[in-house]
Image 1: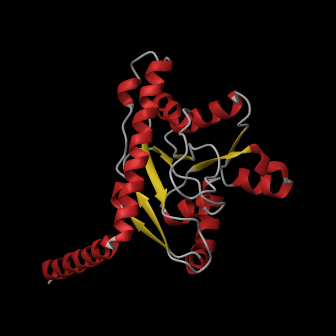
Image 2: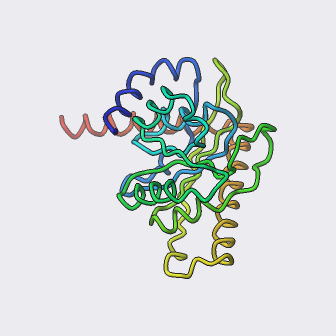
Image 3: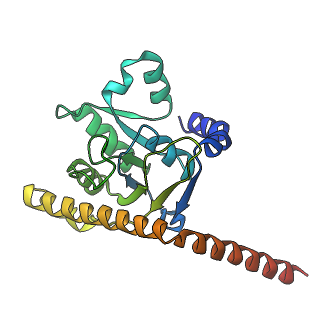
Amino acid sequence: MHGFYKFCKAVLYLPYKAVFPTTVIGKENVPKDRNYLSVGNHLSWADTPNIGINIKGFRHFVAKKEIGDNRFVRWLALKLGVIFIDRGTADLAAVKKILRALKAGENVCIFPEGTRNRENTELQEIKSGAAMFAIKGGAVIVPMMIYRKTRAFRRNWLYVAPPLDLSAYAGRKLDAEALDEAVERLSESMHRAKEYLDDDVANKRWKELRAAARAEKKRAKRERKAGGA
């Protein structure tokens, strides 16, 4: 599964970046030493490949089961590690797959608004599943917010926010009150991330950060050469 995912990503990386140019802000916030549950706003079909192409590493994407109605699409999605979920029922099989993946140390991506935000404005109500998965699966949550709907040959931005740790709820009875509290924290984290991204793009701070990162790489390279001389 992981090998097929890596192969597809390697083949599609350059063509996808050329057609759908996306600047990633906050790459340093992606956890490097542990698994995580990434959550994002859902604006278009391209949200999944945007995260898959632009963020390193393998992850299971959670998708509505209707996407798998086409046999070829379903076969391809399953090969890529997609977990299908029936949003209209308590899909215990899908829940178990998600928790099993997280507990095994793998990453999972979910869009907790539950459906596409076709208005492209404020975040919709955040569903409770993401918070529950993170708590029971022992994973931190990493908001990954996309600036606007993806269109061919139009610059877009993807912001990786600092991780949200909900492990304090792991030792508590996860009743309605505790879950509501955790969901509220998740919702606040995603709203802060969206506000940060909107402000960053509006004021073009991402350019300053990219320039600073390049300068730091050049400085580090000069130091390595000097040290090896």
